[in-house]
Length: 628
Image (cartoon, rainbow, N blue to C red; front, side, top):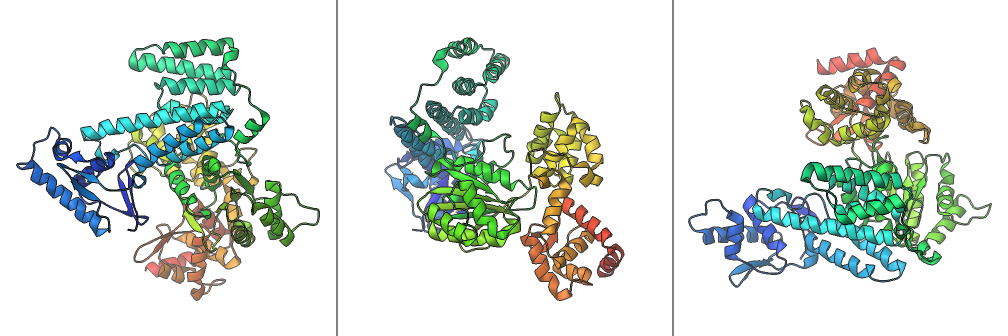
């Protein structure tokens, strides 16, 4: 048995031996979902017929039709080494371990969390939060989303969603009990915004905000809830919620948290230095889920992507979600300011508070660091490794070899390329395809991010259909790159979306003036690309700028014919192009043949470099000659 995993908390998925396999046939998929939801209990054949066909016209011989579906499902699973569909009396059941079904794992984790929450020590509460977090990471979207037209699926999906909301409320109550008021408020804010009529969650959010010293925000939440209940349901808030509102207005001492001992308070705080979330992460739910799973199975995860793709934000969000899984918490080390490779270990030691004497640097610092980490179990985030990639790779190998309970997550524009590393490409956010209807534009993460950030700098930000079309133009021209979208949104205080879209031909002059607290290279789009460009070798820079002549992508043969010239020999192009792909300056699109392309922002920058080098005419002539 290679191990099988069934997933219902989102689209139906089956994984065998860690690899996804598709169940052929909608009928067989529905039968599989019904049997999995029953656990190890048999489902009578008559019940299966009723649920699978419902009010639709029954087949001439429904029992024979059901047996045909069962046979097809059995053949599919048997082909993957899993004979788990069992005839039981007058029905059928799935003979699988409960841990092989994500619904059962979710229920089990919630039960364990509830049991741990009854332990009086703060450590029990912290462990309970870890179980709840593990339960929520199993959710990939709406449950049973493949079967929305089936009545049984709608009922089960509602049941599962209600279980999740109840568990979220329980987790919030545990967090409030150990003083994590700000964390609870941050977790519940988006949830209440999407579920405004869930009064239990609303009450917990109001309590968390009040205890976090944000009384005005707590009162705003109550006012919004009252308006939604009146508009959508024609109801007033419950007596309990109105009473809570009055206690907030009076600053009732009963709302204050119960006093905790210093020891309990210290043990309840997550260790490490991961900063709290300031602005919500948009459009990365799938990545957070899949990377969270990877962190449970690998000790070195590297987030790779071009500058401005949002690697840092994604890594910090992932670290925040996983902190409770590590007894010693999670810590981030920013390497952007480290100028010399020999100072990497020193920077990591300094961020972690490792005691070093004045002479400990270089190899001595790394030895002291490994000794310090050998007794700890934590998540270490190495952010912005690209300019000290060799030193970061060597240190990662030393830590992994000498510290068996330390997990490393790195962000870089190229991979560390060491044994055991799992690489994940951080792609730009999805943009609306050409021709997307205005009312659908904001369903794409790139547009959602732009509008959220624009609304933060321009009060009363409103969009009509023409504005939404312009937003689609903006986010598409910027390739869905989060940094570029943030910089463009900052201009919304003085420019309309249409004006922004019209001025993106000169994007490097337009997109500047980012957050004052950001690194210098993140305050302007040009600075971000400059940083990446300076990390290239001379021949890599030559090839990079010459590729700007292609506007619809290119093949290796085309690159060799067009780029070969002074500074780059024809036989060098393959290796140099591979290096540009490795460093996230060029995108390789698999196929026969492989095609290559640049993001629009990088192509515009490369075109400027081509003009500055005085090579435009020669390269354009070779380009025309190749296609002629």
